[in-house]
Length: 92
Image (cartoon, rainbow, N blue to C red; front, side, top):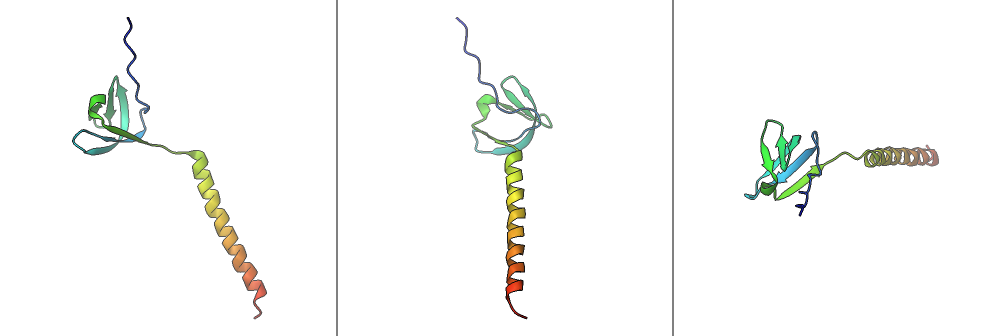
């Protein structure tokens, strides 16, 4: 009978992660490599699966960044339009 495959980490080298260990400490680092069931941080610190209580992955989302920038630019354009319109209506 085959043994079930061990779940894989959903992170890859270069990802920035935060792990929480059983003692409550949180470690933020860039993943250097995945070695079986262990995440290896830059500098060589190793975090085996059985010592990771929680794993957070920080990621960049291109569409969200574009939407944020478009919202900021649109907001400024609207604000400047309102100011310009107000200036034109108020008699000097």
